[in-house]
Image 1 (tube, helix red, strand yellow):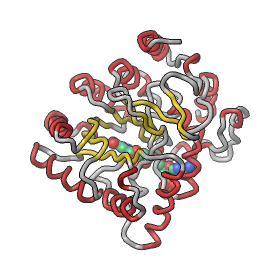
Image 2 (cartoon, helix red, strand yellow):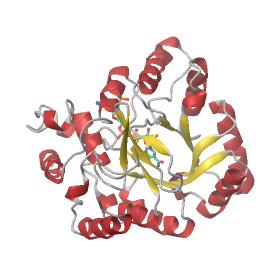
Image 3 (cartoon, rainbow, N blue to C red):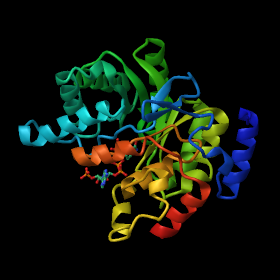
Image 4 (cartoon, rainbow, N blue to C red):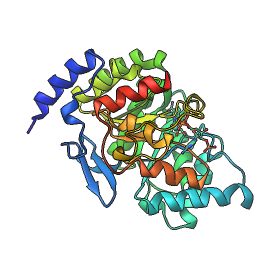
Length: 310
Ligand SMILES: NC(=O)c1ccc[n+]([C@@H]2O[C@H](COP(=O)([O-])OP(=O)(O)OC[C@H]3O[C@@H](n4cnc5c(N)ncnc54)[C@H](OP(=O)(O)O)[C@@H]3O)[C@@H](O)[C@H]2O)c1
């Protein structure tokens, strides 16, 4: 059995070489547990286990009030919870997404089951941060959220203090910081080291692997949970594999779509806790959820995927 210290030393060395500790990539590894078919991973700061497939809401939940717009999202949510999902990422800057999510969760009696993550987005100063969060609670129809993160490091010193205060008041359980561009990774690492959040959220995909250099090793070293955004590179990865067959090893890895291959790629990095793909289409939601069960990719399978999308 590998101790946490041995694991961290090993992962720092292998990350520097662009590799992962291959012997630790099996689904029976220390950081991965299975509940039903959806796997869970532990948040280092608390030990709470959360499902590895979550969902985003940017774009997909930015809709109006018509039945035609909302019915597919009702089904997206129904399938998400039925498939073992709970983690939902949103933000007050995603148009109507928080309000739509709040309505649809309440309608289906799912608000209490959701592990809600939202953000302090584009605000300056303590009062503005507190006021924005109060608005998020109203729109989400709840009195607390699981995770509150500073969005893209905006006004981070002040806003992180706001999150600390809200944690102390019991309105937020976990603190976080987010970014979505490789150009923001160095700044994110500095702020993570300064603030020691419970979570960081970052972009990582088979075509955008910059997070392997510093962000993911630092998260492992400091015990920060990692939420992955843009695992499909905002959908662009699908164009790269258009008309390409799945790799020959897909079935043995429990994969029957490119979406599952891309999600399993992100999840096979040992620093990663949860990935949050976004879709407004029920069948795509079912597809994405399948990536939360079955084996983790081996190092050879990861490298093959990198070659295939090049
Ligand atoms: N700075 C930040 O904090 C930040 C920045 C970016 C994103 N995020 C969060 O991360 C979430 C995910 O990122 P993202 O939405 O930018 O990108 P993404 O998840 O990489 O890609 C979303 C795109 O993939 C398509 N898609 C989803 N599932 C699919 C499937 N099974 N097959 C084919 N296409 C599929 C979606 O189209 P359809 O909707 O048409 O299915 C959409 O165009 C966001 O929603 C947001 O919650 C946070």
